[in-house]
Length: 102
Image (cartoon, rainbow, N blue to C red; front, side, top):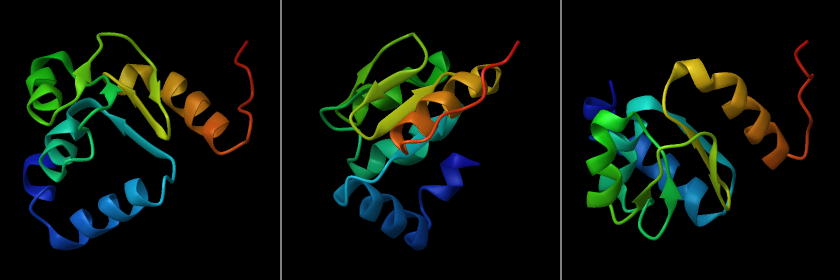
């Protein structure tokens, strides 16, 4: 659960490292609850589960009710039903391509 994960020092270290190193980061649903307090959404545009969109804004980010939302190395979707979009966008950030569904 992101509300607990955000307090974990190792989680914080890893997330901050990925953002500082400009490595690709993907997130979905309520993950913004864990990301926002770390300051990594500050100045970013992303999405999240609409019920917690305030977390993005409190973290200095801009919430967009769309998916996928890509801002630099960050890609996000609103919930699990958009995972195919998340994975395609994330693979593109990694320089890979995903198979196209029929």
